[in-house]
Length: 397
Image (cartoon, rainbow, N blue to C red; front, top):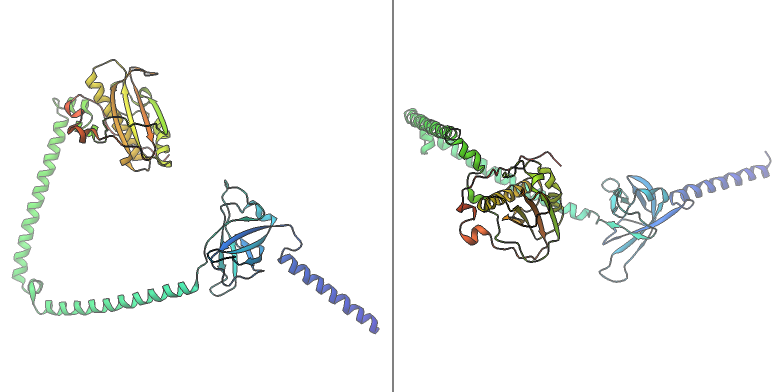
């Protein structure tokens, strides 16, 4: 082959290699593809250089364009990233940038987490949240502290083992109470007899308690007493006012829920919940929002005995409170009750009454507790029969 032809082949091959290299480097640096920029700020980017990888889900999707120092003390270092357009659908406003290391001592790169589906899209030039990198010096210091603690624990274990050896030697030699028990068979036999007698006494006492409980249960089902317990529905009328306040507070509630009593309870004169899931809207609001305190207010229509209706409304407010406390996560000290008795102006089901939940903002003064203020609850003055039993816990909402 002529010399000129060989020279031409060499030049063409060199140019091809140069072009391929340019395209390979340009592809890695995203010089020939559509990109957009994002920024993140760190207190320290030690080990990270311009041109470093940016990975989303472990996949190389961008590069570090440049690193900008702060203009004054107290500010953070800004890292500018070029990212491929394909990442725009998975990087959101709640994505987080971290500085990661390949292996234990490898190169550092930026990792961006996926955003949530409901979060807003990022825009070109946005600054997204970041987490400080793990400093190797801090890791080594923590490891050193752990080793020091382990060495101290080993020394303590060694001393404890030496003490146990000493105690075992004394026991084997018959020294002390335990040594005497181990080596003196007569003393052990006497102690065993005493322990056996004590066990028999405890068994008899437990049997007596069991008999007493069975007798009390039988009394509850006795022909003369079962109607009494069944009509009350609660063991102590004072419990109805345990969380009851004496009046509604001054101020405007931030939220109100109103439920017809006929929708919640099985009978007109009953406080047993029948359709407790209707209360879930109020419970979810209490669990998911900030508030000062709330009041469950129960009332009846104008018909019927006044004192019985007062006790009935106190019982209804109590069981509604118990359902909300047991099934929704919030501070139960923030939920109070108030039995209003007869109330005019009922919109529907006037004879049955209503149950309302008033939710007040933080800072609202809570009125005094009725039981504390009066010394005895209003229901303690009356023993009217009310079916006030707590509802069963429903399945997860």
